[in-house]
Image (cartoon, rainbow, N blue to C red; front, side, top):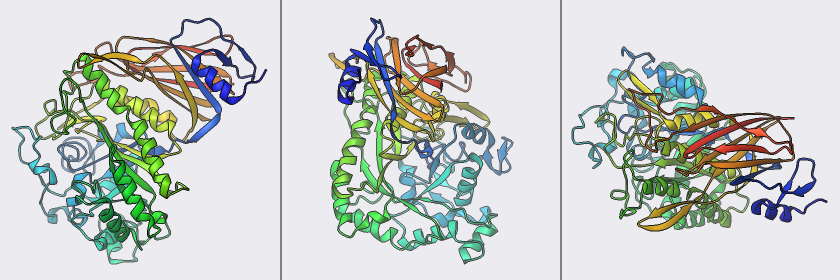
Length: 554
């Protein structure tokens, strides 16, 4: 007997029926499994763009100076001033795109300060110099008074070294549309064609960089100008109109909402539609940070943050629950965009996401917004990437904030010391998804229970996503539960398993993290899955873990 699709979906969710690869339905075997994951191999969602594995570099604290840039004359191994250990490690996780120079810094930055002979570059006050979050003993240095030793050419060479596509954020608040036009000209005009092309050649790059991705401002609702949506729509049209393409398809990205601010999206798209502006927009940038709002804290961005390492059980769950709001944010803003752009020509870009904690765990006083990264951050990253995969038809780019020494970084660096964080290992595990076709995946799992302010609460019990490239299928699964391992059945509908390998990132200590002294405290280890005679995979998902199953199909 064959099942109608709706009947099958209901049965899969309730665990009452299994549909085998042959297409026959059979009564479910009695089982002890907690979780059922059904992967519908014949129902692709969309391609998982490499740009979903993007990164963010801002002139903020120790991201650039002490992180990426050590200087050409440094004793630290470097490639023309760029930290070599960082280049080597970043190449491994295949960065789809790297966003620079901000962030809030972008709307105070003049790109001309960062080109030409380094000895002639001006020193400028950094946007973040007056931040209340600086450690009290933070010294002066290029993180407060930028020396501009790392500029446009240096960043674009960093992208060339690591394989990431550059994404440049233009200054809309304090520069003009002409400055934006000329930055595009400096980067992309043909060799020898313009004065700016000759200046680029003098810096060592005769051929154009061919930068495709351009952000038209950043957080224009706040540090990027404090505009209304209608005011920003006007500025967006002015900046993006008649920018030279040089035979390329430039991808302009608008400054989208702060988290759940649906009004910003609706009012901007309404005003943009008045002049038919959708042809000049490729992406709409959503920002969402996760911080604790439990234990009597408020949702205020200054007062609501917990500790990066010394957190109670409640804050473990509350942070992950907050990050899981990404799913509804994507759906809600996508629906509003569709009210005006019915063909959905404009895609979502989540160009800032990750965890944000209170100060105190930074590895050096110059690392403003630097914070330690634990196994909790790894689970947050796994859950979020799974969400992007499940919405691969909507989200075209995503950039975790930030790359090194800041917020949910993949790397720590100070002077000659360098270490990988648990979040790095998640990106390493998930690289196998890049370029694959995301597949519809359904998870039936008990919710994780915890206590919030003395009252019962629950959150998503398990997160998963799947993708396929020809005979290779990848499933990733994250378990946010601190104590419950989940015995899991995984059924592939429309394919048969030939062999499977498993890697798991887990820790028995919920505060486990890597450090310069112990850089391998948290790293992936091989796991085990089995294939039953009926073709169903069985796998025990460890508590507090991120897991990857790589499957070769028959």
